[in-house]
Length: 217
Image 1: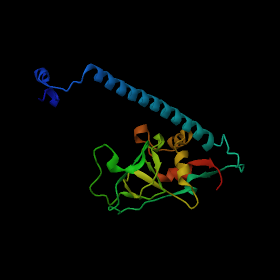
Image 2 (image 1 turned 90 degrees about the vertical axis):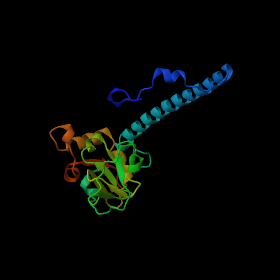
Image 3 (image 1 turned 30 degrees about the vertical axis):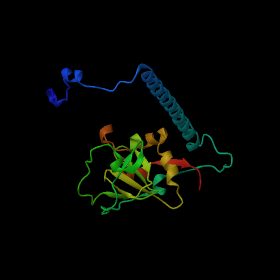
Image 4 (image 1 turned 180 degrees about the horizontal axis):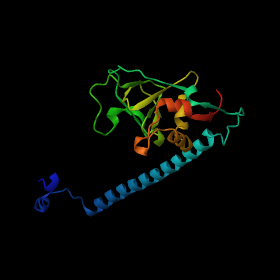
């Protein structure tokens, strides 16, 4: 039945009439042991995953900042404006391509894989094309690290900015670099807006003011 505020409720009387299959005591104990063992395995795997994630963060911090150099590489790093590495892709009228989403944790994925209501506009003529090898970022959330390398070709909301790498630039390397706290803070500094909810990093600020150090080709 439906209670106040539209919430579903089950009457106590109806529960008393509900029949469930019940195995014998020894079988119940065996089932509990198996499920408890699975719980322990899950906890262990989650712990190991958390440790691996922390290890990855440490390695990224060391390698992407040049604090630790690989033994075969000694050439000094250079610094340049990101505008020298990426141009802005503004291709539109590609409605027949699949709709994608750019997330901070899952990267660029088909919009259908998100367990969220589809609020995209029916008219997708102004949606932006993103190609394999591009980096897309949320213009309003780049200062929170919402950017990703794309393994897909498709279209995304105009709320995103699409970065097209220049020749010989490994965009996947920069997709990792864009996740470093130091880089995210750089994007925060040059995002425009009086408060965080209105901050945005448009391509003009991205290309003119954001400079990073990295290894030569």
